[in-house]
Length: 258
Image (cartoon, rainbow, N blue to C red):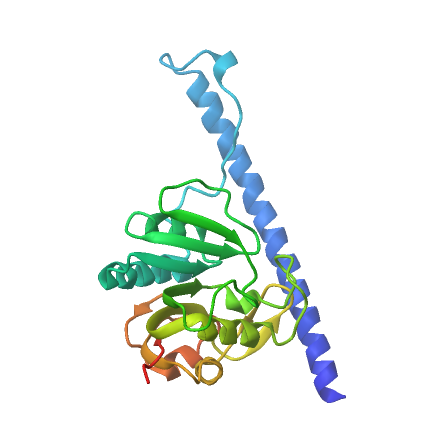
């Protein structure tokens, strides 16, 4: 009973915290809109300005920052995986559901087959699009020598992308990746790491122990990651990732040859 009350209070706290944050952001946005209109007025009055009839409003209010913003999880994981795939010199690669930008860049160095429940409607040399489900991929056992799945498995089973609701979704996805990986093949895999939680229907957070247990039939070659401070760490200590609120674990696995 006490746990239910604590959980309910935590949900209420998060709700009102987000409402206050949204309110404060709206105040900031209002001041940015005023600043935008001042700039527009000043610009249109300059002698070298285009005719007023050719100036159209398109306020972009959140780009005037001290530093360029970027998503550290995706930025570092894509570079990490790209470098390893490049160094492997594989002539073909299979990716399951990773970011389109990452997949597109890979086609510059190898032939890429992309498996996704929502196919990428892009036409590129070296890109083969296949609509498919990570829980049932169209490959034989032990058939893929180079495989990646970056920030995907944590979503499986939560319905976010139109997949079927399944509490075991992430674990089943991992077993399917293990099944298709060839003996001696390489899998580059990532997802959020920290204290285990489910944010329905966004994503799950796992501990490193959970992921290593799910991949018990594979051998870990390297564990790198991004911590809560946004630091990219090669060969990171598992304790560092497990202590994160929302870290990113970058796992390089291989399947041992018998």
